[in-house]
Length: 428
Image 1 (cartoon, helix red, strand yellow):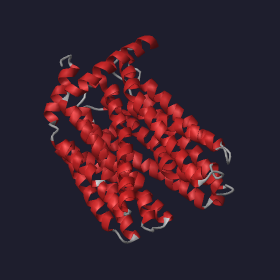
Image 2 (tube, helix red, strand yellow):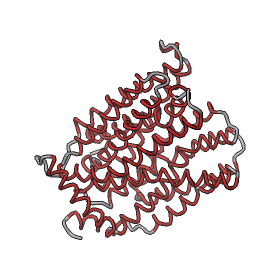
Image 3 (cartoon, rainbow, N blue to C red):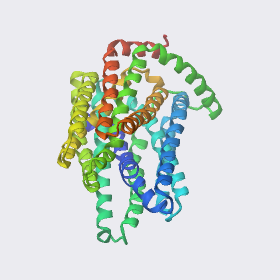
Image 4 (cartoon, rainbow, N blue to C red):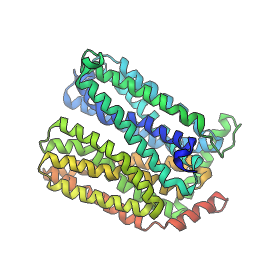
């Protein structure tokens, strides 16, 4: 069946449409600025920056520590959808709660933000693992890309509306920009909740051992997790892929997180940089679908290597960039490959893991993604501090992409898939 005619595939993709509003409007867009200018306005700039960094780091550490375990427990009990509902509800309630936080209550804002990130990141473990329940291996590439494409379009659309609300609050019946930002947090919670309903109703979960009590599921999950640690090391190509993914996705995340800071260091206007963020979102929608088609025809590995090549060209261009209009062109270039490299990474990894352990293996996948938020920014910051040159700092990120490409080239898709199927049937 065509993915466009399958209710369960469209329902699954809509969850990306739903939760990407949090990633775009809250994490990348408004929370960092609003935290410093509204909730923590009474703190020194250095102190508010410190607490914002602590919030992001603490949430990431929590996800790193729990992702493989909760994935194993969900696999053991066949309760991936139940866990998806729990973490989604956690993220929605905490995000909506930001609407109620008054000016100056920065500690409460930080606490809600941390729990919201844990809900967002935790839900992705189970959302990713449900890929096996909506399509087979032939559809992995396009369906995975469809999810990311929906995320770029949905997240970008709501973010565009939220930006208009802050620029023209009176047109939306709001008092000022501060109230518009608070209402934006509430809109994200409503958007996330509304578009999460289809995946919970229409996607049927397979595998697991339903009917177990929580004690049995936790005990079984712990035993499975210990076994999975050993299995990951024995699945050579799966292990190599995770190392490659950690390197190149670190480069991707670094560019996402540091692009605005890099533009500001070159003297570009902040409003123009927000426009560039919107450009990336909307270009990412059709581009992710295109990479899905490419992955289906060529296989995911060539598509990922192509995207890495584009990122290296982007870095070289950014190193020599002089004008703000170039920043917009780079935003287009990044939008062309960002969703594609994420989508094909997910579908490639799905081929290299046993279906009956998808939750815990995707727990490792998301754990590596969170670890990837550390090295790149530190590399850029360190090079900038030592050399005093932001241009050299952006150039240093190329090392992550080169290392990732070299490791990925050593991954044999056929042998890796064969090893995963053997493990799925009870072999070693």
